[in-house]
Image: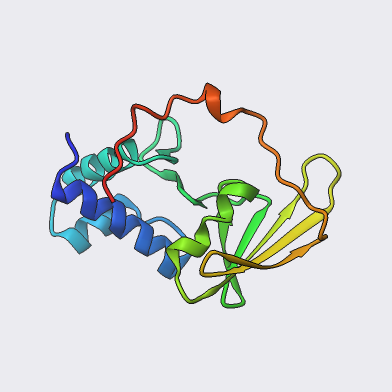
Length: 157
């Protein structure tokens, strides 16, 4: 399935559902909101995950695991929007992209460093970093961007 209007809508509906509820919609929920059969909704949602960057299903299941920048399973990257914590980030760095999904809303990301166990907190509004605690915090990725093959992902939003 290509990047059809239905695939684009499923991508956005899944993203908006994350923002509204803190979790991905099950494909049966997507079926009801789009007016297609559950089987069609699953196919369309999987095509949307395949077309986007950073979205995938839990291996061997029909359950959304991640939909960038959100994780549908608990992580050590807590995301709060306007003071309410009900979201998880895919990773501490990816979670910083939430600010672009929710304009005009304050986003707080609290991540526990997997190396030292300290908490790093970043508060943003409209892409602007308001505070970083501790101020000397840095980000780290175990895989260099140059080793990732992003060329197979479609950009359609």
